[in-house]
Length: 444
Ligand code: GLU
Image 1 (cartoon, rainbow, N blue to C red):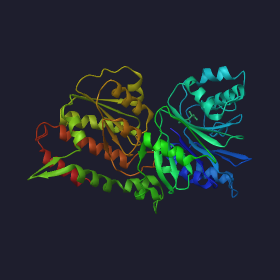
Image 2 (cartoon, rainbow, N blue to C red):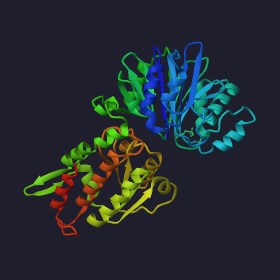
Image 3 (cartoon, rainbow, N blue to C red):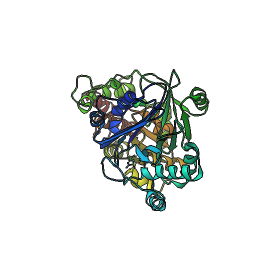
């Protein structure tokens, strides 16, 4: 999982790209880079480390240019090193990429007669392929990208631009999220995550799976963007979340997020626990209640920390809810052929709502007609868009790579699910639901 970012506007883009990359660091921080282009020159700067190291390498003289792309990397193909950092120079093409090209080895073999590779990444095969098609068939960047896509296997999104000639950025969404935002003055930003957009963005759309779009300098981006707004999902531009303002006086994001835990739990519990006379009960949004009403088996899918929250969820749901629960890591679930039947419910747990393997599991359940409830922290994310119902954890942005407040919120919601599913007001341990809910309310 990497962070990708791009901008094309009427003034220098370097500072806004560097700021955006800082926010994207939680998606990957083994290396970082930017490519900045002006009318007749360009600069590429890459380094091992995160944006701080990138700023140090750039020094005081920020590159000048009205078009740029940037990246924070979490390596999948090729170790973290400067030559493997994005953006990748591929002849006249420059690329930043999130995801995996599964057939990159065979493409590399095929292309190595025509071009020289400079990195060990799968990403470079995309850039080299586009550059090769542009040169061989005299194609524009957009047309060459269109022809390259059917030759690539995998789930990915990327941005490509060129070092000379047309000044445009081509954006491709093939199963991993990519958002496009617009400023009031017609500037266009691309990002894998909405938190990286600058404050001046006034409208955001999510590209759909299979989209290949091109925004060019000096072109009518406004009109093009408006046409997209009519057919693509619009994401609300929420600037009200205080956590987006940075670490405040805390030394690290992780410490800040740990300190936010009581507040997060309190708001979850206030919103879900209701009084009915002397008894306490649980009230979920109607679409979640409907999905839980007829469930006979729950399949919990998550990756990393979310998977571990799922293991705790299993203990609680089986014990209190008396419903069989299976928990599986997203990458296992999606690449086998699991038995899914009537009465099954997929509970997908993902902080970002963009975890590729969890999304793969959601899509598999959708294809097989199994309802999906997702526990997600990021509104407007792919998991929210693609699930039958979503429970929003509302824990606020979590930048710490080790999840803290979101993990706790996931466990809290699954405890509530377990109690909601409990058929009897008195649990096997003898506590009443009201007593357990009261204990839960004391936790914050
Ligand atoms: N596969 C690319 C690389 O290793 C992108 C990594 C990712 O999206 O995590 O550079």
